[in-house]
Each structure stands twice: as C-alpha cells, then as structure tokens.
Length: 317
Length: 191
Image (cartoon, rainbow over all chains, first blue to last red; front, top):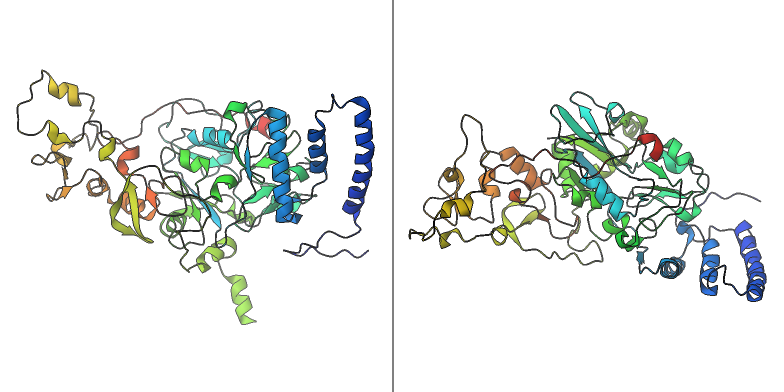
C-alpha cells in the first residue's frame, strides 16, 4: 500500500479500507453481541443503555480534524448528554471554528505584573483544571532584578507581593508558530489551528507525554489522576478543544481560552489581571493593542534562539 | 534566485514576518458571530487611537456622592463634622514627598463637579485621563495605544478600555502590597 502524505483540507484522508473502517465494522458486530449480553444481565451495572450507546459511539469517533461539521455536532451532543446523565450537569459545548483573518498573539508586561496571581486562579476556574492535583497552566516566577530567564526565578513564592527589587514573569503555553510539541505527538492528537492556537484532541491523546518532553517552556500538563472539579464551580460554557472535562492519562494545556477567544472575548487570565500586565489580540489587525506593543515597546521572546517562534512576547515599560 | 536568497537572509521570519505583512485594516466590528455588548456605561474618549475612536467606562455614576455640588454649593452645611464624614477616608499619597499634591491640584475650586488642569481647563469626571496625562504622559500614550490599562471583556468589536481610576485610586495611585490570590505547587509534581 502506498502511503499518501495527508493533504490539508482533504476530507477524504481516511483510507476506504483502512484499519479504522475495519474497527468500525468490528464495533458494529460487537455492539450487536454487547446488546444481546446487556439484555441478558439487565444492564444495571453498566449504566443505562442510552449511556452505554453514547459511550460506545464516542469510543469510535474520528480525530477532530477529520470530522465533518455534522460529526462534530453529533459528538458535542453526545458529550453534553453524557455529562447530563453522569453528573446531572447542563453544559453547552461549542465547536466554533477559527475566525478568518485572525492570528492570536499575547504580550506580557514584566514591569506591570505584581505577582498577585489573580490570573492563575481565574484560569483554574475557567478551564476546569483538576483541583485534586492543583493543576495550573500559568506559573508566575518571582525574579530578582537583572535575572533574565524564569529558570532561575522562584515559582513557589508565598508571601506578600510585590517584593522590593523583584519583578514577576508569567509563563504559560506560548502557542509557538513552529511548535515542537505537535511534531513529537505520535497520534497527531495535537496541532496548531489556523488562528495560531495549539490544541489537543483529548480523546486521541494516548498519554505518552512526548509533547511534554518536547516543549522547552513547561507549557503542558498531564492528568496523573481523574480530574476533579466541584460541579458548582464547573464552567459550563465549554469548547471541544478547550475546557471540556479531560480524563486521567490525557494531556492538556493552555488554549488561549479557545471557548472565549473565538467568541470575541479575552482569555480569563487577561480579564482577571488587576494591573493590566496582559495584552491579547489579533496579530493580523494593524490597529490592535498587541500590534501597538510590538511596534512601540521593547519586546523579547523567551528562548527565541530555539526557533520555536512563540506568539508570546514579554515587554517592559 | 537573488530574491529567494534575500528572503532566506532576512532577519525577520516566521510569525514576525507574518504580522508585519498584515497591513490591511481588519474589520473589527463584526469578526465574530457572537454578542459583544457590554452591560456597563461608557463614554467616547476625546482622543483617537491608531484604529480611530475608542471608548472608556464612566466614572461619575460609580462615585458614591456625585454630584459634588450637592454639598459644595456655597451654602452652609448643617451637619457636625461634615468634612470628616464625607471625605475622612481619603488618604492622599500622590506626588513626591517634597512636593505632594493637594486637593486643588486636580479638583476645581470654583466648579466643584469638575476637575481642572494646570492650564485651567475644566475636565469632566468621566474623563480623568486628561488629568493624569498631564504628568503621566508616557502612560497615557501607552493607554491610548493599548500597552497600558486593558480592554473590557472583548478583544473584538468596539474598543472599550478601563479608565485610569478603575485600577488606580487617584488619591493614592500605587498598588498595595498584598497576599497573592493563590499559590503554585512545586514544579516537579505538576509535570
């Protein structure tokens, strides 16, 4: 069999008689058998037959990039229904596509940040991060004047801030234009969207953590345990590639709050920042705030020499 | 061939080149199919930013005892210790130690509902940036352009930004030292 390099925007990527089609056939056969078994044992242990059916279909869905819009809508409806059955919670999930003419960029003012960590708390809440292991996408490093790299900073500070002769530097996923993490993934579960956001298809992640090793910025997080979020604190407006609930053994990361940014809103960290140290906007809009910063301020990118081409700049006043 | 060689040796490449090539105006009014309305009141700023008009949130409706002329109207105030009750909480830590600001550096003596600049120009309370910008002109330039202060809720649509006084107490503008909102676990455990 000849291997064809996958083309962008080619819906016919899946081979007609590939492994996936075979699995589908096998799944149908197994479903018939499973249903017969279920009828035999009453189905009490495995949840309702509706839940079983939904989970069965979820198990055999495609990679998000290969789905048609109808298939995206179908999986979103299934996930919403499963959340309702499992936890009794009404979530609204979106599959909003990238907006034409938009490339998201981010700038961080190291002069303005005072280390209050409001952004971290807002991010945990917005993105339904695991409360048990205290997962956080953002790390704020306390640095002495003159230090240049967060690697020598202190991210474990817990005292009143700001401290004299120190500055604060936030680190999160930089959404590199030339992202090493996406190249390391053996299942193509992570990729860069056309609006520049690096996302993960959680259901295609096998949890090998190659991407974590490939990222030079500690931008990725792994679920060592089943993520736990109190239902009353759960953010109900979710995106398939964003803050929907992850499972144990899956990789996750900052998505520039894709559920918010694609609806025109600012990411939660930007909105929560009490000092205005965080600037977010469209790099392709010559009038945007981020372009003003890039044009008029002294900017630098962390580890720029690696060639990762991050869309996250630091600047000073 | 020479052209290609030129591209290869250009100092800007990747995303820097991508954004530098993007010079066409972006339709900021309706890029997203979503409701971008704000539930707050805002006024148009008297200056323009690189993209034209922009707006800032109002201040007068957030001030507890506006309008000032209710009391400051040249009539006797029939209440004991009125000044302490009305303005006793104000702590003025603004300006240098040797030359601190006083009330009338910013507030108008004659028309109490207004502020007044060093040159005697009356300034509406909804437009405090005109006052602050007299000394903090660098910050004001950044605020107009978008490197200081922040937009409210949306990166798209009508540009509405926070006012100076939304973050800074005009009487003691420096941010206070306080406890962080949360803490970070050791790095090795989250990785």
